[in-house]
Image (tube, rainbow, N blue to C red):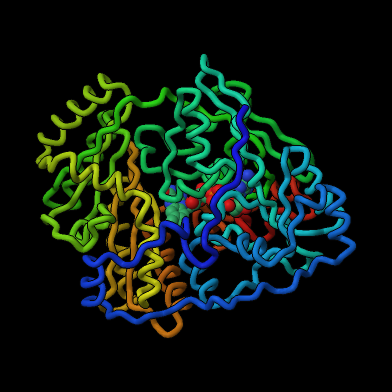
Length: 527
Ligand SMILES: Cc1cc2nc3c(=O)[nH]c(=O)nc-3n(C[C@H](O)[C@H](O)[C@H](O)COP(=O)(O)OP(=O)(O)OC[C@H]3O[C@@H](n4cnc5c(N)ncnc54)[C@H](O)[C@@H]3O)c2cc1C
């Protein structure tokens, strides 16, 4: 089947496609100036990558394993494979800190290539960091390197094939290096869709979605990524694991779940079998206004518990609605107040219309006010733009970051209050804390916070203190440390609270069995 060719690389100090970078919109500029003042904080462009620590002999043997053309030691490639895209990652890159740069970047073309690199890494005790799209926001690409002969970035960029489609079972087998749009383009040629649209869709990959248990903007309708995965092929230092011989089974614990969310610490995912659906014939998005966040949240709960979820369902709180973050193209523009909910319907015309009519009746009955398709279309149009705005804000001295968690419905308000208070009290007066409900379930929902504050002279510790306070508040509220961003290195100190001592010991045992010499993503995920 078709193999896709070259791809755009992200700017090493910013989010996304360099060609899509935009200045702060005029509407937002005034608002930001009033709230925080504007201080130009240019990034340090004269950044040098540390000298590679890998010996010439090891490099030569690596070239023998993979072919010299797939082994890259040039500064630019190593720089582009350094860390992920959290605000701390960007702050470090902007300040010229590239201390986590890999010594070498290798580009395997197949499962067997990956297995060969792992065997080489075990033999020479070299750390290996699987690299998908590089959109990680939890430090999952910043592995420990002390005690190792070097650190290799295992870049899956060449593994971009759609291997098979089973139109009868509605499954497809994808290679891990396919970015979201590339995977959907290949699937569309077959008349099917995966339906996974995280905000990082443009750059994140199939392997990364599986390795982090990602969740997308249409997950209410299509399901989280882990719910879409039917099978996996994984290369580990101990050999190959293939899982997923049936849609469901009772053959002991489901080992697919062990590798989903394993963040490159247990193995490298080399194939993913996903559930697909027919390409939607229509996509309709619309807006609803609610008197309060609580009223909108209750309506979402009612929809979920009635089994009537649209494909897209999200609700901004009063503060997020007021600055129009739900509609990034109109940020700072006039808002009608209350709380904005976005609903979306995708599928055949009949199915979408039937779902829409049932949801409309229910939401109207609960006191929601429809505000029309323009609000929904505006959200859909700007849905991938907010991360570009983060760079524009960092450029003018505004510290911006997001964080997410989830809890049961009965604990939603306590979690919301606790996290908001922790962020406001750590970052101080004038800090803007915005929130939306990004995903809903019958039993609960996830809360996604966006934080903006004036940068101090040293913004990295400023943010790390706020993030630690938010994590403590999440743990104190009994919620999860992450609903979809994964653990990486950043959430690891809090994982113990979530899964307990015995849970951590199970993770360690699995790691020790699959990766006995600890070469895979050292320091990531497993405490
Ligand atoms: C602006 C922005 C918006 C985001 N929005 C969302 C969102 O809406 N929903 C969401 O869930 N997340 C979101 N994220 C987080 C991130 O995009 C996801 O975690 C994504 O799934 C990571 O995919 P990736 O291909 O970029 O993986 P990477 O960042 O390359 O890697 C992530 C982790 O997985 C490991 N890994 C990667 N590929 C493999 C593989 N094939 N086998 C084994 N391990 C592997 C890496 O070593 C690393 O530990 C966002 C991030 C940013 C920067």
